[in-house]
Length: 321
Ligand SMILES: *[C@@H]1O[C@H](CO)[C@@H](O)[C@H](O)[C@H]1NC(C)=O
Image 1 (tube, rainbow, N blue to C red):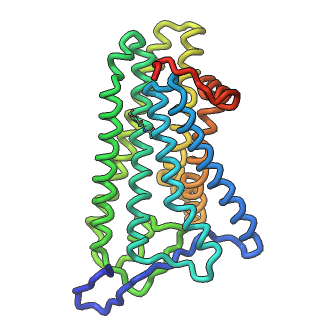
Image 2: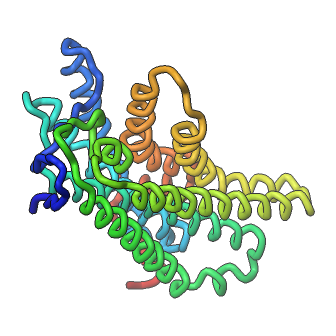
Image 3: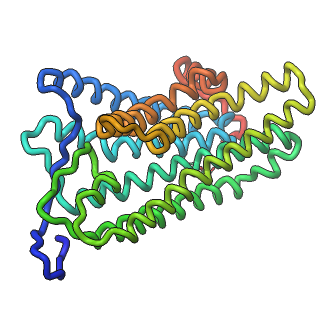
């Protein structure tokens, strides 16, 4: 499947792109290769462990942990979209990616990136209900609502990733097929386009609003309400409870949005490509790796499940399944 050009300009058909990768000095290549490989393996193992612990321990079959398990799955996939290809390209002499591969990568990058954003909103809502309506928690966060939220996230994210990818497949590329990035990023691809990309830019702009700003606002609103409900009846116990259950989520949210805000909202004049690359590394490699640690190091339930897992591998099943 090659892009077809029916314009009367002198266009060449591009069948592959060259991913320039990271601006690493040749003598440091091996070091960075080992570093990224180690980080990738940590991401996969850490997140798999979270999913395993949650599925094995019936105490953790609550909305909060089911969402966390979904987030871990999404983290695992998100880093698998970019890092293996980055590692392969670091080794090869000609770091190329075929055109269909590039669009596929773009699709899944958007898909799992959005999914993460939506799941963080669902988790914030869960914390909001748990703190502000503790007595109605089980009724309000019913299994049906939880699975609806997960399904809704998948539907929205499929729709968005599909839309962006279809729009990108209509874009024509000329001679320049060098992407100064380590994966097929939507805006990096649009910079190479030589056909009209107004509609792509418009959709990208709106998507940033809908998928980054609105979830961020929803999370901020949830936390504002949590905060005001704690402050209304301030007690050490209440504050501690809120902190212990929201702390991990708040850390993940800050990490996720901190990166995005740093990347998009603080443009720097000098060396923006380098900054962009470093930020992209942060959110494709570092965030998915840290999420399981943030949750497991601060969380007694996960620690407890891990201990039980190590000790007997027999986890008491209160549901009698
Ligand atoms: C994701 O969440 C849904 C709904 O809470 C749950 O049923 C499902 O098991 C979770 N999936 C994973 C992979 O954890």
